[in-house]
Amino acid sequence: MFDEETVELLRSGNSPYDFPGLTLSRTVEQSKAINQIRGVAIIIAGAGMCTGGRVKHHLINNISRHESTILFVGYQSPGTLGRQILDGPEEVRIFGEFFPVKAKIEKISGFSGHADHDELQRWMSSIRNVPRRVFVNHGDPESAAALAADLTADRGWSCTIPEYQTSYTL
Image (cartoon, rainbow, N blue to C red; front, side, top):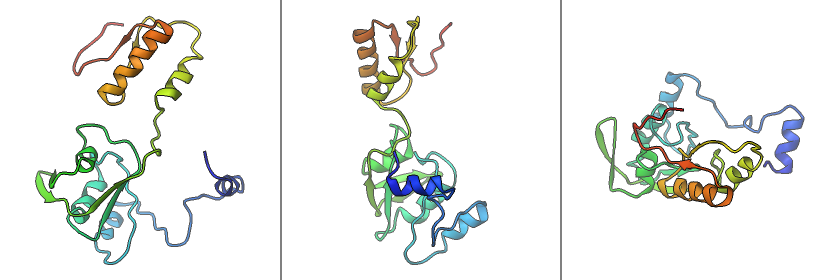
């Protein structure tokens, strides 16, 4: 999935994440120091759905700044802070406080690390023994329902979309 330049970089033993100007923040103190930067900076933060960790502190320091852009490059599940921000509210609650959303909010699709519908179907086509039941427990409710319906129609598999706090005996 990498372009030729990145493949060559990896083959030569180099990392595409080692380039001039990149500073890794490995400690909490280093991460907090980012918030003192004034001027142009790109903060690449983990916790992709903004549910915990240092990213929340970076959001607190930037979400109310008109000159900031918050760019999402992965899927944001319903109910997560990341999805709330993408849905365009006037304010969001972070650590119990409300912050006005003044930053520009952007999204680039296609960078999710999860398999999509077709990739899951392709992977499941290699399963030789028909499973007694398939639990579809990932994705938006509509996507999960579509995958379960397709597995039932295409393969005749028994599919269940588990509901929150429901237990099953296997």
